[in-house]
Amino acid sequence: MGRAAPFVAGCICGAAAEYLLDPGAGRRRRHLVRDKAVSRVRHRSRDAVRRAKYAEGVAEGVARRAAHAVHPVQHEEPDDVTLSRKVESIAFREAGTPKGHVSVNAERGVVFLRGQLDSPDQIEALVDAAGAVDGVKEVKNLLHTPS
Image (cartoon, rainbow, N blue to C red; front, side, top):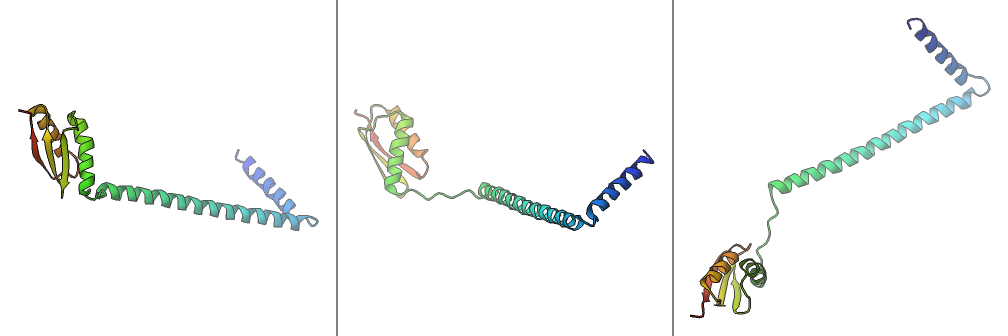
């Protein structure tokens, strides 16, 4: 391959020179080659800009996810009505107690449970479940049994 490579390269250069320097059509061919080269550069430039913008968006998304992981969004404290409804829906379901004889009120994060349940175990389960609800600061137990 020592002698063949320079010969092949010389043939390619000669063919290119004949193609581009032809007196009849060489000028048109040179302009076509130039236009295609400029077009390829322009398209590559647009692709590079598009890829850079995509990478920028991905990096921004990663940065925002990381910022939220470090500083989680603080939720507002629910108002009293919302908190009492939340306790009614969550605590009664978790404790497995009936809603009919129990009244739930909330004042500034303190939940008041008033009414009558069948057993002390139901009362304890409801108080524990109400205290576990997000936004509840304290539970005031005013529940009693029938006896």
